[in-house]
Length: 424
Ligand code: UDP
Image 1 (tube, rainbow, N blue to C red):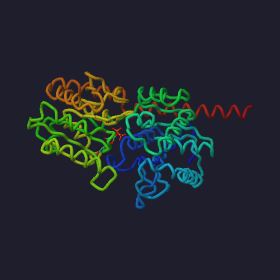
Image 2 (image 1 turned 45 degrees about the horizontal axis):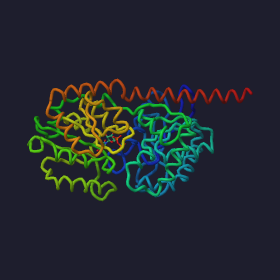
Image 3 (image 1 turned 90 degrees about the horizontal axis):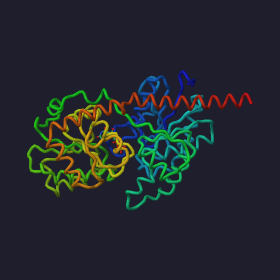
């Protein structure tokens, strides 16, 4: 592998978010999608892309080719089994050693790494002690913000907070995915370090090209149904309980056409099974079983159908640095009702592309959902504006161009520094 500014190489490091697994189960969500989409988009811009992640099953292939110049590479670090992200830290030194070994095996040292989530940021900072490399980092979740919404902190909290601060202060560039995340980093993590805002993106060709009628027919939903849709990981932080309770309080609750679809999650026995059972329990307590459908993990092929079939997509997260689901729904011309937090305040424009409601406030969510469901013309207007907003600001290709520009600037800067040193 030869890296030059014409055909540069980059390592995307995502220790716990494997870019080539099925999304929607256990802990696989937005980060996995981000890394895969960034990697593939960069490859289309002539980058040679290697995406490094942890092997989580003995039978997984070591290498997955996405495109001729874009692949996932799995390194063994700890058990070849699912390990919750809060328990991965101790295996990171092994990940670093395996990464270095891989570089030796191909005779190439990556000049640029883009690390994802704090675990990978630690790997990146260690690599800098072994080689000359520039680090770009995306947090995906900021501990200092996340912990504000939690009653009991995990044992790893102190380590995570310290690593997140050191990364912000030492990385060549941090990418905040929303202005809200930028504010959080500055006010809660450190006033030092270089941060650019480059949002997450979505594929505007994949979403928004199927009509509601066709989608409903394909999914076996009635043409006149009133469809409220959630999709995402089953994690208490995602606030699924709020959308269930909101539907329980909706004016349309007795309307036979009302449908609540809750997509995502594994079958029982997996790490996210407990939240799934808890949510099913609340649905039963509220007597909503007849209206509610749990399709499980939604595949990449089916996802555009679900968004198109929905009247409204609800994103009730307690905390969301960006929130890909919101822009996927918007790209599908489906208005979004979201928690008034984090990146959702950036993507959803209240009254124009959807509505925002206070976190965990089921009554406010119910009111917002009812407002949209009871005014079909307004609903369509919100949907059109939502699509326009995604096309203007959040298409993957546009986002990849911004990242490409940043990486090239960093590589050019390091070349210039190198030349100065040589000339001095
Ligand atoms: N997702 C999916 N199928 C599912 C559940 C989720 O493809 O059954 C995808 C969803 O479309 C989105 C991602 O998982 O691309 C979730 O990302 P988001 O940023 O909304 O949440 P996170 O997982 O990062 O908390």
